[in-house]
Image 1 (cartoon, one colour):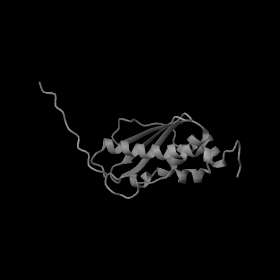
Image 2 (spheres, helix red, strand yellow):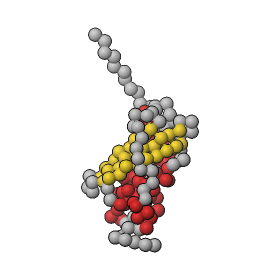
Image 3 (cartoon, one colour):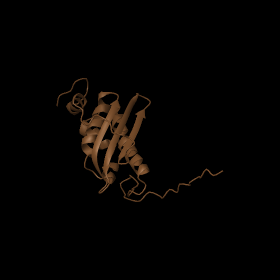
Length: 157
Protein backbone atom coordinates (compact mmCIF):
# COMPACT_ATOMS: atom_id res chain seq x y z
CA UNK A 1 0.00 0.00 0.00
CA UNK A 2 1.58 3.25 -1.17
CA UNK A 3 0.35 6.56 0.19
CA UNK A 4 1.14 10.04 -1.02
CA UNK A 5 -0.38 12.98 0.77
CA UNK A 6 -2.70 10.60 2.62
CA UNK A 7 -4.25 9.24 -0.59
CA UNK A 8 -4.45 5.47 -0.95
CA UNK A 9 -2.93 3.95 -4.10
CA UNK A 10 -6.43 3.14 -5.42
CA UNK A 11 -7.38 6.82 -5.25
CA UNK A 12 -4.12 7.80 -6.92
CA UNK A 13 -4.72 5.26 -9.69
CA UNK A 14 -8.25 6.49 -10.48
CA UNK A 15 -7.16 10.12 -10.14
CA UNK A 16 -4.14 9.84 -12.43
CA UNK A 17 -5.88 7.50 -14.93
CA UNK A 18 -9.60 8.20 -14.60
CA UNK A 19 -11.88 5.80 -16.44
CA UNK A 20 -14.87 6.78 -18.58
CA UNK A 21 -14.35 10.55 -18.59
CA UNK A 22 -16.63 12.33 -21.04
CA UNK A 23 -20.21 13.19 -21.69
CA UNK A 24 -23.21 12.07 -23.69
CA UNK A 25 -26.02 13.97 -25.35
CA UNK A 26 -28.33 14.69 -22.43
CA UNK A 27 -31.23 15.02 -24.87
CA UNK A 28 -31.06 11.35 -25.88
CA UNK A 29 -33.98 9.45 -24.37
CA UNK A 30 -31.77 6.51 -23.39
CA UNK A 31 -29.42 8.77 -21.40
CA UNK A 32 -29.93 9.68 -17.76
CA UNK A 33 -27.95 12.59 -16.32
CA UNK A 34 -27.18 13.25 -12.68
CA UNK A 35 -25.59 16.51 -11.58
CA UNK A 36 -24.71 16.83 -7.90
CA UNK A 37 -22.48 19.06 -5.83
CA UNK A 38 -21.12 19.61 -2.35
CA UNK A 39 -21.31 23.31 -1.49
CA UNK A 40 -19.02 22.87 1.53
CA UNK A 41 -16.01 21.87 -0.58
CA UNK A 42 -16.99 22.92 -4.09
CA UNK A 43 -16.93 19.45 -5.67
CA UNK A 44 -19.30 19.03 -8.63
CA UNK A 45 -20.03 15.69 -10.27
CA UNK A 46 -21.89 14.97 -13.52
CA UNK A 47 -22.64 11.33 -14.20
CA UNK A 48 -24.41 10.06 -17.30
CA UNK A 49 -25.70 6.58 -18.02
CA UNK A 50 -26.86 5.10 -21.32
CA UNK A 51 -29.51 2.47 -20.65
CA UNK A 52 -30.32 -0.53 -22.81
CA UNK A 53 -34.14 -0.41 -22.74
CA UNK A 54 -34.46 -4.14 -23.47
CA UNK A 55 -33.21 -5.14 -20.04
CA UNK A 56 -32.74 -1.86 -18.11
CA UNK A 57 -28.98 -2.36 -17.89
CA UNK A 58 -26.36 0.36 -17.98
CA UNK A 59 -24.70 -0.05 -21.37
CA UNK A 60 -22.36 2.94 -21.07
CA UNK A 61 -21.43 5.47 -18.42
CA UNK A 62 -19.45 8.73 -18.45
CA UNK A 63 -18.51 11.33 -15.88
CA UNK A 64 -17.05 14.78 -15.49
CA UNK A 65 -16.02 15.82 -12.00
CA UNK A 66 -14.53 19.06 -10.81
CA UNK A 67 -13.05 18.51 -7.39
CA UNK A 68 -10.39 16.85 -5.32
CA UNK A 69 -8.65 13.57 -6.08
CA UNK A 70 -11.08 11.61 -3.92
CA UNK A 71 -14.08 13.02 -5.81
CA UNK A 72 -12.55 12.16 -9.18
CA UNK A 73 -11.56 8.69 -7.95
CA UNK A 74 -15.05 8.06 -6.55
CA UNK A 75 -16.59 9.00 -9.91
CA UNK A 76 -14.15 6.91 -11.90
CA UNK A 77 -14.58 3.85 -9.68
CA UNK A 78 -18.36 4.20 -9.78
CA UNK A 79 -18.37 4.14 -13.59
CA UNK A 80 -16.51 0.84 -13.57
CA UNK A 81 -18.80 -0.56 -10.90
CA UNK A 82 -22.16 0.23 -12.54
CA UNK A 83 -21.43 -0.71 -16.16
CA UNK A 84 -23.55 -3.76 -16.98
CA UNK A 85 -25.69 -3.49 -13.85
CA UNK A 86 -29.44 -3.19 -13.97
CA UNK A 87 -30.84 0.15 -12.86
CA UNK A 88 -32.20 -1.54 -9.75
CA UNK A 89 -28.76 -2.92 -8.84
CA UNK A 90 -27.06 0.42 -9.48
CA UNK A 91 -29.69 2.20 -7.40
CA UNK A 92 -28.74 0.07 -4.40
CA UNK A 93 -25.10 1.15 -4.38
CA UNK A 94 -24.14 2.79 -1.10
CA UNK A 95 -21.41 5.33 -0.58
CA UNK A 96 -19.84 3.05 2.03
CA UNK A 97 -19.03 0.48 -0.68
CA UNK A 98 -17.19 3.14 -2.69
CA UNK A 99 -15.41 4.54 0.38
CA UNK A 100 -14.32 1.07 1.49
CA UNK A 101 -12.99 0.09 -1.95
CA UNK A 102 -11.00 3.33 -2.28
CA UNK A 103 -9.96 3.38 1.40
CA UNK A 104 -11.25 6.94 1.77
CA UNK A 105 -10.53 8.62 5.10
CA UNK A 106 -13.50 9.98 7.10
CA UNK A 107 -12.78 13.54 5.95
CA UNK A 108 -13.36 12.43 2.33
CA UNK A 109 -16.55 10.40 2.80
CA UNK A 110 -18.58 13.22 1.23
CA UNK A 111 -16.92 12.34 -2.10
CA UNK A 112 -18.37 8.83 -2.02
CA UNK A 113 -21.74 10.31 -0.98
CA UNK A 114 -21.65 12.50 -4.09
CA UNK A 115 -21.06 9.41 -6.24
CA UNK A 116 -24.04 7.62 -4.66
CA UNK A 117 -26.22 10.68 -5.17
CA UNK A 118 -25.03 11.04 -8.78
CA UNK A 119 -26.01 7.51 -9.84
CA UNK A 120 -29.41 7.82 -8.17
CA UNK A 121 -29.95 11.19 -9.82
CA UNK A 122 -28.99 9.79 -13.24
CA UNK A 123 -31.38 6.86 -12.80
CA UNK A 124 -34.16 9.21 -11.72
CA UNK A 125 -33.53 11.42 -14.77
CA UNK A 126 -33.70 8.37 -17.06
CA UNK A 127 -37.05 7.36 -15.57
CA UNK A 128 -38.36 10.92 -15.94
CA UNK A 129 -37.58 10.73 -19.66
CA UNK A 130 -38.96 7.20 -19.96
CA UNK A 131 -42.12 7.02 -17.85
CA UNK A 132 -43.06 3.61 -19.25
CA UNK A 133 -39.80 2.03 -18.08
CA UNK A 134 -40.08 -0.27 -15.09
CA UNK A 135 -39.32 1.91 -12.09
CA UNK A 136 -38.22 0.96 -8.61
CA UNK A 137 -37.91 2.96 -5.45
CA UNK A 138 -34.08 2.91 -5.67
CA UNK A 139 -34.06 1.73 -2.08
CA UNK A 140 -33.29 -1.85 -2.98
CA UNK A 141 -36.73 -3.24 -2.18
CA UNK A 142 -37.89 -3.38 -5.78
CA UNK A 143 -41.16 -1.73 -4.83
CA UNK A 144 -42.69 0.31 -7.63
CA UNK A 145 -42.70 4.07 -7.39
CA UNK A 146 -46.09 5.68 -7.02
CA UNK A 147 -47.70 6.65 -10.32
CA UNK A 148 -47.50 10.38 -10.96
CA UNK A 149 -50.31 11.88 -12.98
CA UNK A 150 -49.35 14.81 -15.18
CA UNK A 151 -52.13 17.18 -16.06
CA UNK A 152 -52.10 18.41 -19.63
CA UNK A 153 -53.01 22.04 -20.14
CA UNK A 154 -54.20 23.05 -23.58
CA UNK A 155 -53.87 26.55 -24.91
CA UNK A 156 -57.22 27.15 -26.58
CA UNK A 157 -58.48 30.62 -27.27
